[in-house]
Length: 293
Image (cartoon, rainbow, N blue to C red):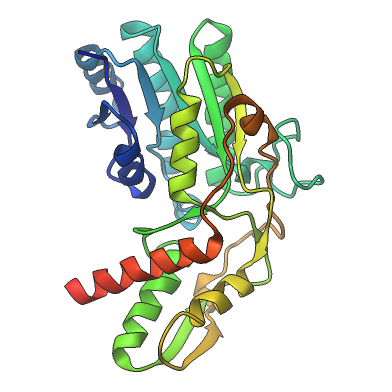
């Protein structure tokens, strides 16, 4: 029997998609902030690899509770790394980070060599988690870091912009139309499909891929205003778009666009699902969710 791949945060948006793609994947049930529980779970399963997804990943939450973001994102990562060191030291650890660590980047598309300059507690804690991974790699652990830029798809929850918009639009269709409330739309984002991103994670688990840092990005950016226009064009009722001050971030990055050349060279990965399909699938999932309530 082959050794499993443990997935922390398996019940989350990305985790549910990743479990569909990974053979021998097992949800990591332990609270990552509990070092003993993490070590025990690792000892019991003896994994061949760990995909570390568990995190405080919603930026506004990290502003409201920065200590919690640092505890989960940094201490949680250290606990996973130390559990692997002690219980399954030959396992690969895929630490999932974010393109937000680059902050207001000066180069586009942004390569891995660009400096980290995070502008939110979420991004800062992820940068620190990366440093923990780099330290562990220096001491012999097999650590890969995936800097994933924005990714969307079916099941995105409504705390996040696209999840909120699709949920609102699904409800507005049932109501015959109305107002779509949005935050900042004059920013550009590099948006991949979550299913493509999970495929990248699967490829990064291959032993032939060298440890290191890899961007997961499309290399293209789109204005969020255009994303809203695409979604509004998919619904069957009249929609008015209004900005809601409560949805604005304390610090927003004007442009994000990543260079995934290193990932492509190492694995052959490239994004396959077009943005229009991602949005259509996300909206359709929101419709099903609204009807089932």
